Amino acid sequence: MKSKNRYWLLVAALLIPITFAGAHPAQRLGDRDDESASRQRIASDFAKAILVAKDNYAGTVDLNKATKSSILGMLHTLDPHSNYFDPKEWEKVQQDQRSRYSGIGSTIAQRNEKVFIMSPFDGTPAHRGGIRYGDQIVEINGESTETWSSIQVSNKLIGPEGTSVTVKVMRLGSSTPVEFKFVREAVRLDSVTNYYMAGNGVGYINFDRGFNFTSYDEIRTALAELKSQGMSSLILDLRGNPGGLLDQAIDVASEFLPRGQVIVSVKGRTEYTEPNVYKSIGTDPATVPLVILINRNTASASEIVAGAIQDHGRGLIVGETSFGKGLVQRIFQLPFNTGLTLTTARYYTPYGRSLQRDYSSGSLYDYYTRHDATETEAQPSASPNNRNLESPLALASPTPHPHTGPAVKTAAGRVFYGGGGITPDIEVREPINTPARLRIAEAAFHFTRQLAAGQVPGLESYRVEKVQYGKNPKATDFPITDRVVEAFREFAHSHPDFQVTAAQIEEELEFAKLRLRQEIITAAFSNDAGARVLLDNDAQILRALEALPDAKRLAESVRSGAFLG
Image (cartoon, rainbow, N blue to C red; front, top):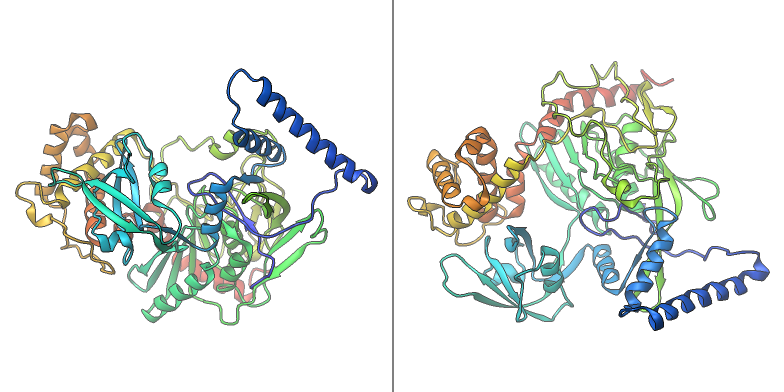
């Protein structure tokens, strides 16, 4: 569906700011005859308050900051998702909407309070210029980055297309900083970050960057290519997907649901006083068995897709309970290149569930960092016994959790609850990152930085001169041998600041090998290839693979109508 009115479904402040689009009439502030006077009084009171502070406060008043805080304070009394964007944030909004940004084209990460290059993107200025994995960014346009965070570095690397930026890096093997001069270019920011055949006819699509203008086309391309490679079942990974354009979510869901099936309904105070029902427009939807992966950072538009699939019994949902955002925002252009988003409606799954979590406490911190009571407990294993369904013909309903809405009976007679996100059909929690594991991962990066630079004695063959894009790493490519592990132990021993002991490495040996493998594959074959190393050992993906036969039988039973009341 290509609606002219584009809505954004947002969960703010997760990892990357999310945006929305549209326009909407102003809310009435009183009776029509008094509306103008009310607006003038509010504007006058606000201006007077700001000027009193400016003229009488003991310190200096930053008027821009004060104005922004005032607007945000007002919006956050309404709900957690109405938001305001200053000029710099508004520019980021435009970039996210276009599924692109202007910069040098590289992923960066903060390690041990320093910022490093992880992987340049293929064909970008960073790639052509020779930036490498492990290069430490020490200076941008003559400014030292000594105390900068990765966000501060990113903000300096991003800029108007066609402008130049000078970057100095410390590279292992070089006694002085290496200088690069780049001209910023448009860099694609795809919604689909990875897709491939995982073996045995199983296709995998990692769709974690939000629903932007190109999302539907990206999904169609991925599905077509996987189908050409013999895909007979699919895992769609929506973990960490923060949401985005409503029409893109509808189009993506239409790729899996028969034409005419309800995907979502939207109801608001003004424009949608009566629910606006959106139905699948799929003319040739994919019929392969489907499992969708979600976690607690799966939100908004991604919850719409997962909720539609779950309500109709088209596939199974594996992972953790999703974020729980059922509010719709529209964007208002404000003067001076700023904007605000305002909640104007709620959305509901095909069978009428509202997924919105309670936010009546008014605490944004509690809302965004909430933890279920059981989250600190030991994580369940990936064994087939730990599941909340016995078979597709006798599906157990997910257990309701606190503050959920009323029970809703859906396809195949299953019962779900609204008010707290999407509860997965099969719950598999992500492994806990213990302090020891976090320290091992940190040390693994710094060790691999030396390894990829050819500076580990006896392992010079692991040196990486340049990234090889588009290659599917083999087990024989940069294997993590006993010699590599021993060299890592020696590195940890000689760098006590990482606080990684030999006993910890031994206890977490498989994890250490996995992180070493992920780092060297990132250095050699790009960030996407490194991410796949982790995915191939992901407990939630392993469970999703086990669930595919059940997903197939569930979809077949629903199509046959055997369980419909």
